[in-house]
Image (cartoon, rainbow, N blue to C red; front, side, top):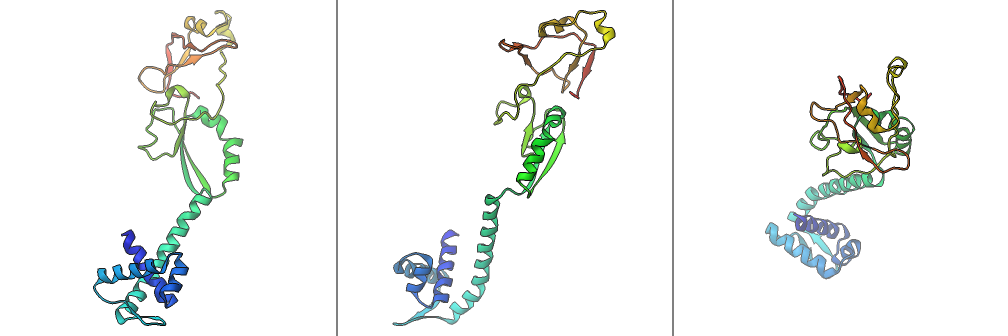
Length: 229
């Protein structure tokens, strides 16, 4: 197919330039390359397309008919290629993002607004979910999730630093129980556990100031929540 398109483009150049040398200069190739391309095209269609003289080149009746049919098609191809090339010059279209509610809470403000300002031809389609989803199979362009729930075969880049977690509780609860001083102390408290699925919770690791990451404590709980927010 590529040889046929090249032959057609060469034929149109010869027809418009009325000469092999002029067509070669227009295409940026040698005159012999133009001559060979026309010869191969004539062999393919089985008829003579051009009539060569010592001073000029004229189309035969078959050549005139082919030129009338091919030239608009080549223009359509050039237009299509040019329009596709514009896409690489400036991002445009719809970007589908799958986010957790936690991620959306700190990305949907200035960060995404700044992205849209920088790319006026881009639209964002955002879906929020804590459930594990296959972003490729479901047609998403990217996903923003907590690091511990990202599939290992996915390419991931950080969009924020480590999340800072704090312990909160009702004053009435802490009046009866000592306040935790370390993540491991949570194992002795009645916590609300986050389980994005019915399966086991993600293997989260905590890090206190100046320490290395430690495994998430097994906090006892009679409460389990599917959503982080």
